[in-house]
Length: 93
Image 1 (cartoon, rainbow, N blue to C red):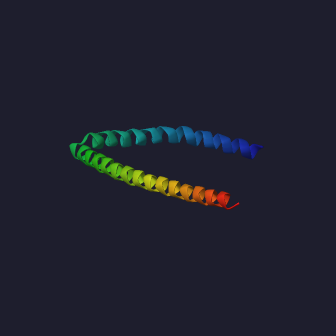
Image 2 (cartoon, one colour; image 1 turned 30 degrees about the vertical axis):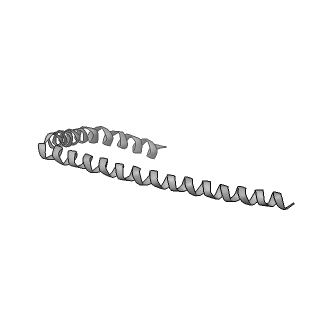
Image 3 (tube, rainbow, N blue to C red; image 1 turned 120 degrees about the horizontal axis):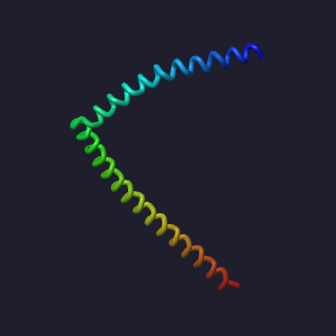
């Protein structure tokens, strides 16, 4: 029990001391990130990436749509075959 109590006391102390240092480090990183995000060069790259992603999404949408149309046509063809076979079997009896 004493060991657990000491462990939790140490963890709490470490958390309090670490959180102050951690907060300062976080604030420095966040400030640098805001400066970098506001940089015109960064915004140019972000804009280019958005355009590339938009173009890629359009291409993917077109390909998927074509594949779905092809799959639908194949399913209908197989259904017609199955119906034709069933109709022929019915006429044989």
